Image (cartoon, rainbow, N blue to C red; front, side, top):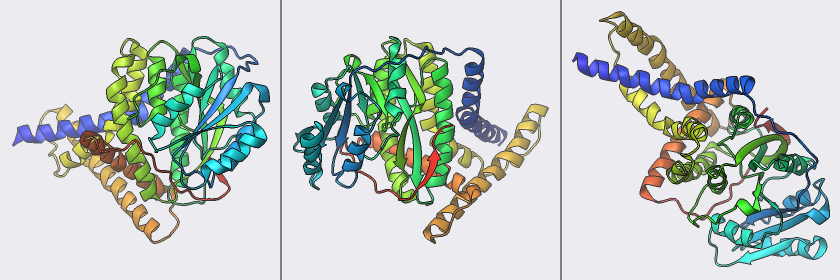
Length: 407
């Protein structure tokens, strides 16, 4: 049936084009724009008052290291307010924080029963004192100069949010290397977006915004940083990426754990996109970035699925020249490319389970396929309304190897 063959060919080519655009074409477009039409901001020695807000649940193993890292920041101590919101911890997190209350003036806001991260943030914001707020996860630590770099752009009134760079550390498991490579790519894209207006990618490890811009968000919000950033950007402020504002975090201990984390993140991403695409619609440039960077990215699992189904049977290379060209692309590029991708991912899965090291040629496809599988799981969870706002901390690998998330 020629019509069915043409339909399969069209689906395959369009799906591959959508994946290629969001993964390669859009970043190249942003790189070109950053080179030809940048919008730089002047830098000053800006040191406003700032509240460091740390939502925490059962973080006894990392909370002391976190608070030591905050207190060691190169920032005037009288300008720095540290507030930990203890969301129903049962492992002694609150007792550890209270030692810092007595010795260093850290504030602790205990909350019971546990209500989830967004509720903890809303409660903390009601108690925040600084002109700016640094929202940060309990697991991340900072080099001493990170905060000064993060607050400097706020000397410009147009800036509403500044998000920093993650450096991934781990023990060489299946997640560490490809996660580091992925974030190098991701944060380069954020850098180009930021140079030309606003980025739509933010991280929860180092996320700074103006307290006066904050509006309490629904307690069922899952991706809190992204929701805050889009709410602020929708009112005309810029969202910037600052590569010198560095946070260290650790890779997940296994791909299964990373997939569980990404499933939750993606469920929240669908939720946030459904809520905030309309909020930024009055900013055409921002809406274009949101669709290209986020909407198409979360739809990539569907494109990959459509591409795989439409490639199950070979399309004959007959008919007019354009059709023969597309059929040749399908036969000699798309079909073998998919076999190589999924074969490498399967090899990565087997090697990880066997406790063997993964070469880059295997670990990167494995991470890509696993991430998109998690994204598909996040979509199903979002459609079912099954994602809880109660976050679970992940265990992490240990080690000293740093992998920079963005250059």
